[in-house]
Length: 590
Ligand code: ASP
Image 1 (cartoon, rainbow, N blue to C red):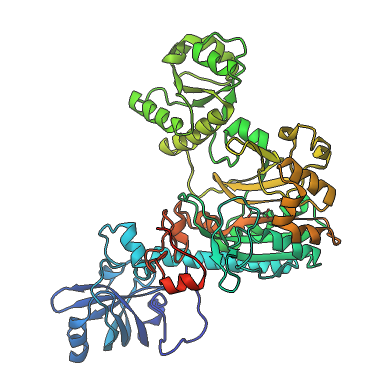
Image 2 (image 1 turned 180 degrees about the vertical axis):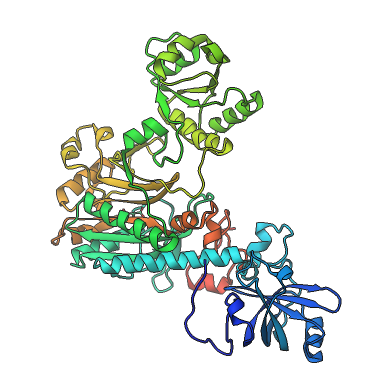
């Protein structure tokens, strides 16, 4: 990815990625970092680097002695200034892998602008460096061309999003960072108030409440590229502070919000990668769970799950699961009978167990259709239930509680696809998942909790089910956008009717008093002439991960946190002075 920078910046005539054969003969002035040095005895090569690229500076017997004196002194990652003449390289020295590979700069003057202390690693060396060391010295790691490219992709994506939303009449409006608890359901980051002893701000888990209030305030169309804070256990695709493209629209139904978000993704992919996205599939939550076991299916490959109608089976393991109210599902891995060892099957079983499955049953379909393995005994029953099984295929079956079967097989599906090379590169398969259950049962709390948040509108035809003990059946007008197995956006039509809101709070076990205490100002706003409205928030870091082709979220954030929520460069979190704590009316208990 190259950049075109207009005009001359400072003393530089060009950046380090700009010179081509056509510039031969020109006198230039470059500034940048020493990426590599090679002393070939009598000839010295210095690779000069900046964010735009690399240029070779070659000193030979024609270089002035003063330049030689500096060249012998410089070390990797020093910052230098080179004045010289662009020369075409000899045929044999042309480097086709470098955009500037046809030329070199022959210096007439070389000067050190800044020296560097000895560094634990440099961007130009290939030696493996742990992520911990890289994060401690983020300013050095960020000099790597890969990370520079990711920052550029991030910038382009943000600018494209802004242009698209601006064109559709969305206003970019900032909302507070010091606020009170928001309804996303994760743990809050809290900030003590100095001025109000014993009282605390919460950092927003999202601008949810404020964006709804902006709709009540008549802003019509709002967006913000905004930091959100959630104190959750971290994963490879999660950070404690992350960025959303947050959107809310008035007088909009589900389809209108989905159309804007889909258009936004299409626009960003087109602008950043030049890619025209395929049509977005639409799946109900129920269909996604049935076919893929998860609500963020990766549609780049098959391996769909089949629910087995094993009502009358005598097969012991399955019988037990069904009698306990569970389900049984199968996944067929085409052509895997021959090359899947016992060791692999054991590893897959271990993998599935992490999701609460007791185990995996397997059967290898041989030539002539006989099945080997534990499923051999129920071959006839299975054959009827799973269409399209051919000799050479491997059949995996899981039985148990629905949640464990779906999570176990659903995640194993992704794992197996990756292991067997079934995931095509450079492909983006977007899909909408709609018609989510409004509530899920929280075992620990012994009550229903909102699957999205308590302001999500139930489907109008399901409102009548509220308060009748049939909460499990209530579907909501919520929608998630998924791509390649990641949830990349989520939102909903909001409740704008006070009576429906009261019923939803009641279903969540929240009485009027508690609802008032937590969200009173939103409820007042919603009772003050609220337009019908809905919105969505896109996980911007995940978008950039997909655009950049990485599965590590830290690769697309300039200053990320570790998986244990630390900033290793700044050394945060860190103890503070007792006086600061006293001022905040806070005492350390550790
Ligand atoms: N605030 C929600 C979230 O962050 C998104 C939305 O409903 O718009 O998940």
